[in-house]
Structures are given as C-alpha cells and as structure tokens.
Image (cartoon, one colour):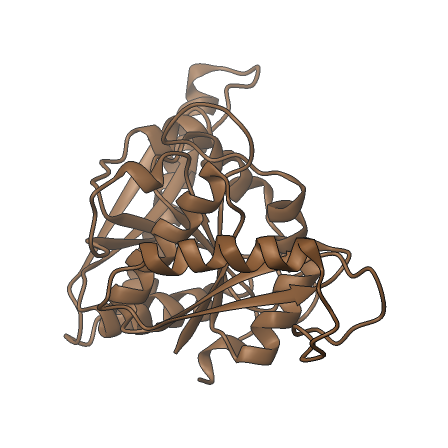
Length: 294
C-alpha cells in the first residue's frame, strides 16, 4: 500500500505531510511525497534524465523535497517525486495512478482557524475528480504530536455507495487495529409549523437513522474490529457534528456525493458542512470500489 502526499513548502504542505506520516505509519504503508511543477516544455510526467535539463524550478523543488524527506521519521518508507503538469490536482492524480497509490493526502488551504479545514482550488479539484480517497488535514496538524490513528469515525447515510464506504472503513480499521465508530447525523431544520409537526419530523428522522445504523453495523460486526454506533442530533449538520466527542488521532471517513461520476469523487453538501466544524482529518471515499482492489 502507498499514499501520495501533495506537497508544498508551506505550512499547509507541512500539515499534509504530517497527516501522511500518521496514516502511513498506521496503515503500514509507503509514503510518496510529490511536488507538481508546471512544464516549460513538453516533458514526460516524471523528471527527465537529460542532464541538459537544468530548470531552476525543478532544482528548488528537489531541495524542498529533500527537506521534506528528512522530516519523515525513519520507521516510514518514503520516496520523493517531481512531476510536471499545469494543474497541481491533475498532476497528483496522474502520479497516484502511476504509483498505484491508494489515497492522496493534502493540507488545508490558506489562513484561518487552527484545527479547522479550508478548501482551496487544489483540494476542491481533487474532491471533484479523484479516483482514490482524498485525505484532508486540518490547519495545524503539523503541530500535533500524534503518532498513529486512534479511532476511525465513519459517517453513514443511506445513499448509493454506503457499502463501499463501510468496506473501506472496515479494511482500514483491520489494517490499523483501531476501533470503528459508526455515526449518523439527524439534522431537522426549524421550518414553520406546529410543535407536533416538528416532533413528528424529528421522531421519523431518528427512527430512520437508527435503522440505517443498525443495518450498517450488521454488515460489518463480525468480531474482527471493535464497532460502536452513535446518533448525533442537531438543528443543522454543523450543530449535530458539534455534539460528537473528538480526540487527538481520530479521523472521519465520508462517502462521495450521489452526484459523482463513476470512479470519481464529488464532495456532497453534508460533507461540506461537516468540514466547517470538524477538528480532525477527513477522508472522502469514492463510490466505486476500485481503490479496494489493492
């Protein structure tokens, strides 16, 4: 198993690298740190071997990658790569395909609240086109002294692709020897209506969500991993997520939107709302099971 980290010599890049190290160590996976630089002439997707190719940009990228490699602990197998593409996101996707990687890891974009996510153009492109899961590191991940994943939380819904999400979460927990928490959100917005109407809508949503959780647990509760389930309620997705308890080393897995094309990601509205308040890394999983084949 290998993981690709999309690296920049920035705090965001350091956050992504820190999460990549944590996941690689937990999954017993190799780590490929990749920098994407724009081509100034037609070149292959890897660094040319022509000694006459002496790009200042490539030299600088290699220096940054060398520094990143040194920062990776010795117990993690790591390789570094420079690839060429006009699009950082497409370059990472192509490199993940070439390397046979099972996921791509990136950091949050720009400035903002420490411990929260920020989706820039690169992450947005990845979240709407990748064929493998995308792991998103919140701001400040680089400052956390967390060696391995503590627990996996799987956000379960009843839409197409939930079975792939469950299988991905189960395989990850088996490989990492970590517990799995199944979570479903009940967010009943306050619309005009009587108290009885609100109560009926809430009760129906809770009953449906508990059914989804019970069915999901039945699919995977074979004793190979420790499984718990939890229902989170609130007036909104954000408030429901806010009722959940999080610890250092936790990660969240969510499924791709039903709008996604086959073999591709598409970040749905629920996952987008969760990202606004999540203090832990999120992994977005495609609907197709291609990434489970290796």
